[in-house]
Amino acid sequence: MSETETPRPADFDEYWDAVDEELARYPAAPTLERLALPSDEFSTVYALRLTSSGPYRIFGYLSVPPGDGPFPGLLAAPHYGSVNHLPHLDDRQRYVTLILMHRGQRLADQPFAATYPGLLTLGIDDPGTYIYRGIVADCLRGAEFLHSLPSVDPSRLAIHGDDLALITAARRPGLKFAAVQAAGLLFYRLMEARERSSDYPVEEINDYLRTAPERREAVARTLAYFDPVHHVPRITATTLFSVGSGGLGGSEWLRPLMGAFAAPVEQYALSQAGATDHDWLDAWMAQRLGSEPKPRLWEVADSTPAGS
Amino acid sequence: MTRKPADQFGTTTVRPPDFDAFWAAIMAEANAIQLNPTLEHVPTRSTAEVEVYDIGYDSLDGLRIAGWYCRPKDSYLPPPYPALLIVPGYISEPTLPKSWARMGYAALGVAPRGKLRSNRHYNPGYPGLLVNNIVDRHTYSYRGFYVDACRAVDFVMTRPEVDSTRIGVHGSSQGGALTIVTAALRRDVVTCGAAGAPYLCGFMDAASLTHSWPYQEINDYLRLYPERAAQVRETLNYFDGINFAPSITAPMMVYIGLNDDVCPPETGYAVYNAIAGPKELHAQPRSAHDAGRFWVMPKVEAFLAKHLRPARAASAVRPV
Image 1 (tube, rainbow over the protein chains, first blue to last red):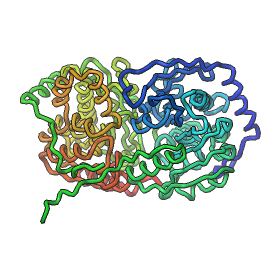
Image 2: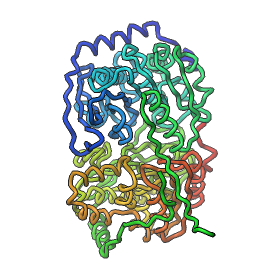
Image 3: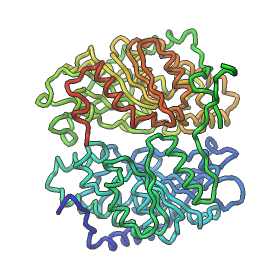
Image 4: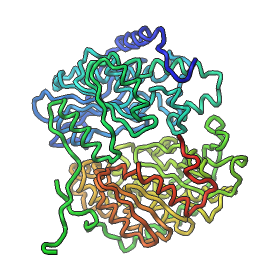
């Protein structure tokens, strides 16, 4: 198999249909517990627990603004790491926000606790046992739950994150996401990316194949099911990509992915100045969800004494 | 929204009269504890250039602290090596500092208590760590957390391949705070430090300037328990990087984002101004908690290389 391309597995659709079928076998059985500490006049924050495939009990922080709603809904797909923060006040004021912890992350780490490094290669020899098969199911379950809430306007539902956001949006076109924001992809062309990077978590793949080079084909086969290039044609929402200045996050690297979309796709060229980038991305999302932007940049008062 | 220039902010942090005595007693207690260092080679993470070890050592309260120790292979670069302590952010897990080892450092990524692999007996979580026992300086979370970072310095000092006259510390956010605290509490051995977007500096000022996590934990806590505000402030004064900074003697580099909503630049200036030794500041307009990382990291690498003199120039081994 060439390492410069990610072929679409012949049974790609069957694989993901099976994930959906397994997830559908388990009711979500949601429970909500109000959290006194982060709840305030701007929102009520809940500890959410849901059953995902496995079955496995996952966790989320759900925040709901005061009032009758319905409000726009914003799902934050879990990033790679053990902790996801509570939703920021700026989002809690405007949206029903769900920040999800997938299986293995803190607050969803019983009975399985993910290790870092280690999660990216767990069960990777076989797509049927790969940990991300269940993690994607966790994200799908979270999206279904958020969409089902009476407090959420289903026509104003959005998701942001990495590959997990793209795959979730692609696997649930029926939720009619209004917008998708993506950055920091992990699974995109990962067998190629690993040859260009020694940074973790990509380096986890290098570590694994350095020890077991004979498994390269099996690893490539598994990762192909998760490469967003095979998922994004199903996305119906407008998608915005944050694009870096070059290398693995640059426009040239992302070109095949951009070309795979059927729905509109936009690019934002990161300035690398975090406040500038945050405010631009925040405004983009707010516009699509019919809300007000919440810029975090502030002006600095002129401290020059009068007459000087 | 308009704010005064960040460099004109006056901090409300106060240095308790017994600050030095408080920490001298803690460090004396820590120094009486055997380090009991262990190293376990991790062949699956090691490369042709770098050996990786899963390490551990004992710290305050009987806790075992974990870390990743990465050193150049003898065949790649012969010892001795300068040591570089890589201290973690608030929610991030310590990564394996292999890239620093390729530059010629014996690099240790430490996991203070509460981080994965060091949380078996102490696990306040996130949110949680910042306000855990915040009304009592004798049991506040960062009492042991700071000591865990300092004992990582002690760990590298036990390594025969390390040149103990060249020991640096580097991190951003909470790692920036730990850089400042470690450089102060281990000023006898720390050669230099590079602190990005320093957290845990001007706690109460920061909480008043932002609603972003993690300082928002303090706002939430005081909304629920307003009557504890004086106790909280009293405790935090003992753990404030601004109060550690005057003890630092090693050269320090501080870099901040002038629109950082997580660790407000006002507090970055406050801790920078309080550093007594040689220092340099890089303040990046329109940068947030990234603290201008995109532009400043080459300067960080150059600063550390100037003071620690690793065998390989950073630019020669930077990943493509």
